[in-house]
Length: 259
View 1 (cartoon, one colour):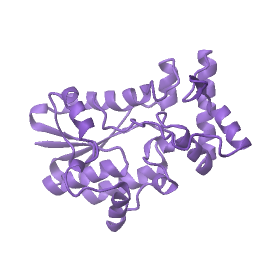
View 2 (cartoon, helix red, strand yellow):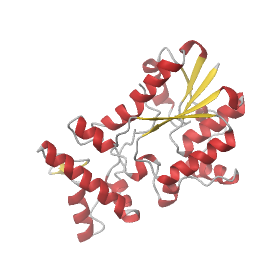
View 3 (cartoon, helix red, strand yellow):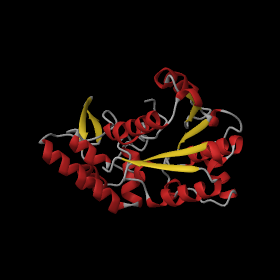
């Protein structure tokens, strides 16, 4: 039996990998990562330390494009409503590799839904058939994010730095296209250079498409309108509080999504 862990380089999927290796040993465990070419460099430091500690096989898959490059090829700006980057750079790549190299009859897939998300797991099961899917974080010990970070520190592995900056997840260097205004305000504050890179990338795509489209949006007089990263930055430079501090978005860019 092969145990296939979808390893996103964040702490949740790393804890899944840790529990699976503890249960079955490293020889029959494979950690599979989809590289979006947008992850923070410290994610890779963390991932390498986890793999070294576990001793399991690690497979890294890459389409070769970044999320915004995929968006241009698909003629859209990736966003919460159209996360083509997650679909193409992660799910489709992982599905193809798994189908080509493993058999559902003698393989189990492990994903990162935790004990607060049984509804998501139940809804996803029909999409995963015929694969058997398990979620170790839905079983004891039940850990909050802060406890999970401390657990890795106790093991001698510092979690990815994005968590220490205040990001709820470690996807795409803090620039997940499904994130909301609060996430992008945080990115601008802690890593303005990276924010500017995404701002330029978004503008390039807008110019290519000739459309007023954007990653972010805002509601004005009950109408949802595009909010470009440039306009959002300029607004914050005028007054730092001009954003929705509760809008963290609905980041689903991890690899726990159904195929």
